[in-house]
Amino acid sequence: MLVGVAVMIASMPLTAAIARYQTKLQRQQMKNKDQRTSIMSEILNNIRSIKLYAWENSFAQRLFDVRNNKELAMLKKMGESTVFLLFLFRC
Image (tube, rainbow, N blue to C red; front, side):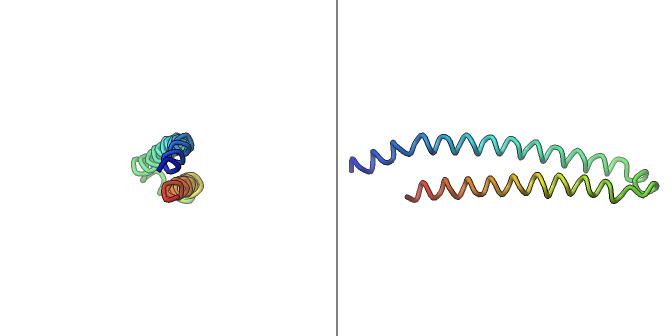
């Protein structure tokens, strides 16, 4: 029993570090979502001008850049840290 308690106490700093890392990732993910929402709002408010001047591709590229390069990469990091944390709990 004492060995189990010792392992649990020894793993607490690692668990706390992973939780802080996940919190940092979550904050960054919210900033990415805010940026994407801002771009979508800009697109919807100015849709007539965008269509008139044929700027669809440039706005779509900005939106996809935020979504694919920032948000999805952050989700991958968050998933990896969650898997590591679950592995730590299972051991």
